[in-house]
Amino acid sequence: MVVDGMMESFDGTKLHFRKDIPEHPKAVVVIVHGLCEHLGRYEYLTGKLFGKNFSVYRFDHRGHAQSEGKRVFYQNFHELADDVNAVVQWAADENPNLPVFLIGHSMGGLAVTLFGTKYPGKVKGIVLSGALTRYNLHVLGELPLALPADTYVPNALGDGVCGDPDVIEAYGKDPLVEKQISIGLMNCCYYAVEWLKENPRQFTDPVLILHGCRDGLVSEKDSRDFFGEIASEDKSLKIYAQLCHEIFNEKCRDEVMDEAIAWLEKRV
Image (cartoon, rainbow, N blue to C red; front, side):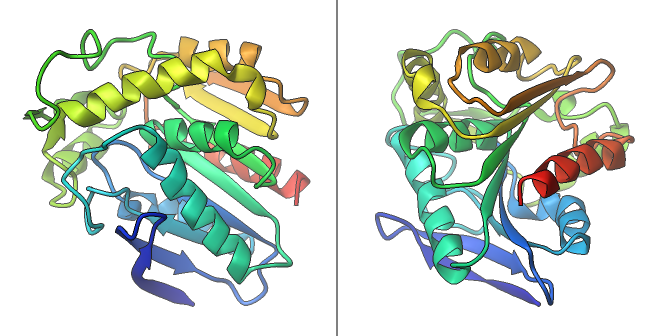
């Protein structure tokens, strides 16, 4: 069963969602996408999870794709964590007898890391993919930027998303991929990272941290630093030597997804 619609977040902002529910689900996975993209770019990963009897909940970030909100903009970084919390709570309420997990990519990885730090113990485990947690690679420049929050700059992330040129081409042509980024969002990411760096011991959830060594958008050192500083007793880290930013879209994506799914299945 597939359900597509809108749900209200913590402040009434309506977020576009999609639910893929197998006949006999054993757990729920909430997928959180990255900056400027949308839930539709995770169709293949959803299919893999669905095939293993995971219900999959996805949503477009506020200000992205089909969700409400000022385009690619955040007032403060807590909106990232609180939107994730709203979706997680909704998924848990709809599935009271099933464990809930999170998968977050890039800025989505930042969002679920903020969520895990602010709301520890609400999910059974978290998988991070190329997560922005320390900003070791200044791809957005030296932050924070002293410009009005509602100033916009072009989305220049495309060339760094993946090692597969077909994925890069599709990203550039995708009408739902946002073409501009606000200074407000960029600065919120900076303040979010600074807050994470101040509170690493508050992150205690089981976590699998995955990163491509050739990631040109988020340094793999982010994941190594985060892994070393958090308080989780159940934590694993894998750096893929030959992969770029979107490890779930590389040509060896099945191998990467199978590892993530195996980790989830051990914790159901």
